[in-house]
Length: 222
Image (cartoon, rainbow, N blue to C red; front, side, top):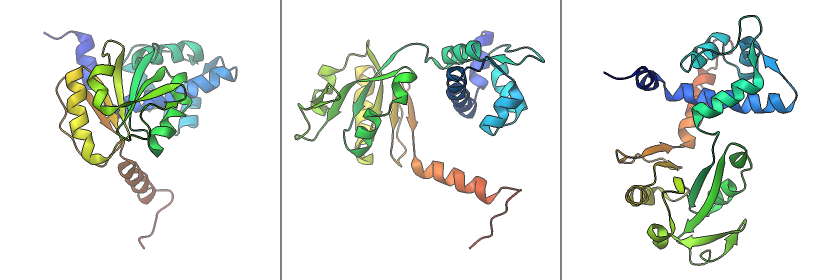
């Protein structure tokens, strides 16, 4: 018989987790601005969701706030960070130091949410050996020698689509647990890994779907 925690976790959708991440980002901003408490309705107004949706998302993980008083911003921020695992430091390896990889290197939000790029890899001989933001670029051929899965458990792939599958397989053998890649390509995922694809085309089509199907602002087909 499965315990209650396991059962609850299995029901939670990726969309709920994404919304938790959005709530966390907003709570961080609110706390910095001096906000002590916030109601689900006010948080819903900020995020563009309904207060019922916010309460439902949070209810998967326990009881939060008090009726009539709202949520304590600091406490809710701390709890959501614990749920998402961002209350601890995550060391990341980045493979691919082209335009996208360079942009990710300079993304300040990473460190603020517990993500730290610690090792860089590329196959371009002109980049290998150079330092970017104080980190030496290693040859991707040295992946197995340079990566320590006890320290680095996440990888970001900013590489051509045709190289993604082979890199995922290598990272799996090394012991990396999670991979994020940016490519319009489906891959075979090893059972021991969690792999996510950030496909810009899919995100844009999600936007165009919602714009096209808005009831308050119908869009005429061209």
